[in-house]
Image (cartoon, rainbow, N blue to C red; front, side, top):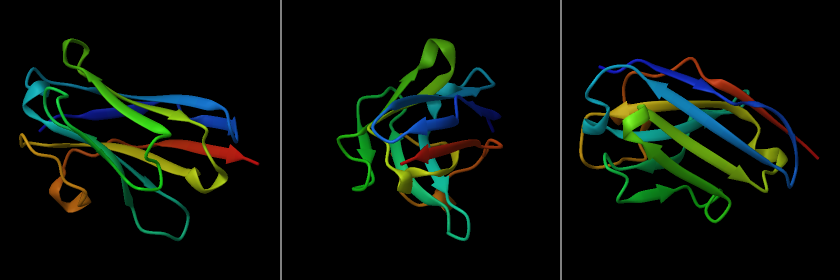
Length: 124
């Protein structure tokens, strides 16, 4: 299983932008679909975005569609989440995770190898 470390979180104003990165260990990164999830205080972890193993297909939660973009660089073993026009309700700890499959999923139980997360706080 890959090991993952997220970075790039911080405090951002609503309407600004932020880019999260997730670095993966191992030489089989391109064998994994990747997902971003988030968890706000007192709430369950929820799906944000996912991308297939070579990046040909992406999917998004309705709440972030047209504002967030997921991408990956397999040569760098990294997956990204570009957050444009964030809203206060986007605040939470953001996690990336890997799924050893050519298909993505919105279910966090279908993923493994969770990173420690990175905090994103959006101020109004």
